[in-house]
Amino acid sequence: MDEKTLKAIAQQLRKPEGEYATAVGNKMNEGNKIINLQSIEAMDIQDNDEILEIGMGNGFFVKELFNINKTITYSGCDYSEEMVAEAAKLNDNLIKQNKAEFILANGKELPFNDHLFDKILTINTLYFWEDPENYFNEIKRVLKKDGKLTIGIRPRSVMKSYPFVKYGFNMFSKEELITLLTQNKFEIEKVEENMEPDQENEGIKFKVENLIAVAKIIN
Ligand SMILES: C[S@@+](CC[C@H](N)C(=O)[O-])C[C@H]1O[C@@H](n2cnc3c(N)ncnc32)[C@H](O)[C@@H]1O
Image 1 (tube, protein in one colour):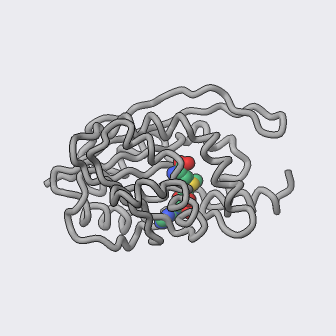
Image 2: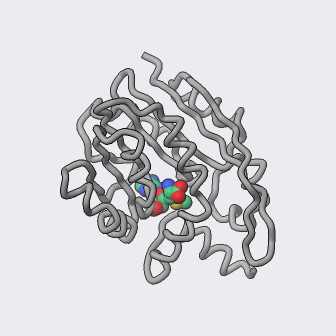
Image 3: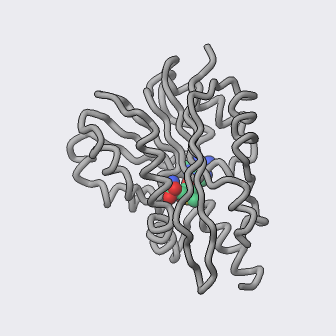
């Protein structure tokens, strides 16, 4: 694959836009099914939880949160217009019931009141946060004092073999993720390291793993 294509893939994963956005959203759902399901499982969803997801893509997995507990409410933020529109279309029934909303917003400037959410979820977005401290400050502002943040990523050990990561991906090992959260005044509740089946793209096999951290604000 040439460098121009790799750069375009990296850009689309960071922010799906334009004519390829729908296809990129669908492709992400295929490749990220397990990390999404395992991150949702790790959140420890309780009755009436108010949940925020940052970077939900096309919102394909939102139904899985409601499959765990129908009493929750969900807000999804993404800075891609196309992803917000797709997510709203896919979850039309939940929007009509006032159970879900999808908002065009950057995770760095969340359009919500202080200490609103019981749980915040973000999967495969941390790589793109150039100034993570600002994101974590915003998350701490909108998370309830005893709320929980769940972050799902692919670890550095597998990311580094993906050819597009040189175009703007920050990578983290388990230890680096723990350090990042601790420096930003989060207390780690648990970190899961999960192996996933290999994936194949254009005849090339890729190793796949996920790293899921659940953390609380240090009060
Ligand atoms: C790699 S995709 C992951 C989508 C989905 N969470 C998954 O795991 O399949 C990253 C998504 O997060 C969104 N995103 C990345 N950085 C963001 C930010 N700073 N604020 C809001 N959305 C962001 C992108 O537009 C994209 O839809």
